[in-house]
Amino acid sequence: MSILVWPPPRRKSKISVAIPASLTSDLPHLRDKSVRAGIVARAAALFRVEDIYIYLDRHGVESEGEFLCKILNYLDTPQYLRKRIYPISPFLKYAGILPPLKAPHHTVSGNLKTIGRGEFREGVVVKSGRSSLVDVGLGKLYPISKRLRKGSRVTVRLVKRRGDVSVKLASKEDVNVYWGYTAYFTGCSLHKTVSMVNADMVLATSKYGEIIYNLLDEFSNTMSTCRNLLILFGSPHESLFDICKREGVKLRGLADYIVNTIPLQGCETVRTEEALLATLSIINLLSCSQPSS
Image (cartoon, rainbow, N blue to C red; front, side, top):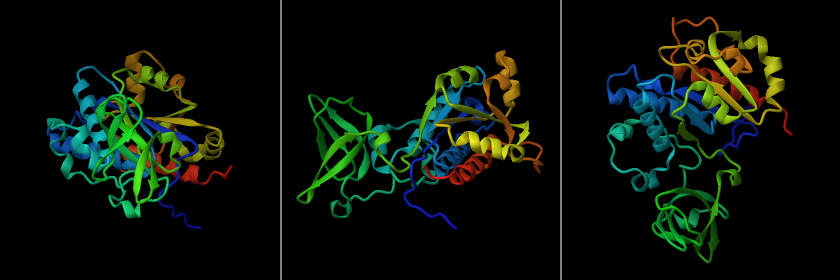
C-alpha cells in the first residue's frame, strides 16, 4: 500500500544529524560550497530532520561551519521572510541558484480567503515594545501582546475573524506536521556535540561498521522506543573513527550503533552528502514500518 500524505506529519521520534564543519572545505569556489549545502538542506527536509548540528571536526574550518549554518537556516526560512531576516552577505551570494525546499512551512498562501482556520505560519518580529509587530507574509504587520526580540523568527497560529485574521504566538511543538529544521554550529568537537544533544540513541555511519541489513530487526525494535535519534557523519577528509582518535575518544563508546548503510559501495569513497541521503532513506523506511501507537 502506498503512503501519500501532504503535508507530512511530524515524526514521533525526532531525528537529528551531526555533520562536520569541514563539509565544504575541499571546494575552492563559493558556488560549489553553496550547491553542496543545498544538497544537505534538501536531504534534511526530504526525510523530516528537525535539527542539524555542525561540529568542529578540526581547527581552521570555523568559517566553513558558520557559512554552512547560515546557508542551511536561510534555505529553511520561508521566502517571504528572507529579506527581513538576512541582510546582504557574501555567504549567500549563490543561494539564489539552489533548489527551494518547498517544505510545509514554505508552501503557504498570501491570500486571506484561502487561509484555513488555525493555520500555522512562520513570522519575523519587525517591531518590539510592550507588544510586538510580526510580519507573516500577508501584506501587513500583526500585533502580538508580548515583548519579542526584534528580528527573531517565530511560529504563529492564525485566527480568522470576520474576514481578517489575528495571530497568536505558538511553537514548532504545537504544529502536527513537519515544520522544517534548525541548523546549529556548535563550535565544539564531535564528542562534546554528542554530549550536548543528549540523544536517546546515537547512530554512527562508517564503511567499517556493521552492515545495516544485519541489524534491521534489532535496530527497528530500538527505534520504536527512541524519542531522539542522533546520526553522526564523518568529513570529506576523515572517517568518524579518525576524528574520534584525534579527539582521544572511542567511537564505540560514543555511539550505540556503528553501521555501514552503503555496503559494497561502487565508488572508493562516499561523500558526506551521499551518506546522508542513503542513511536517512533507510531510517525513513524503518520508521514508516513502525506500528502506529
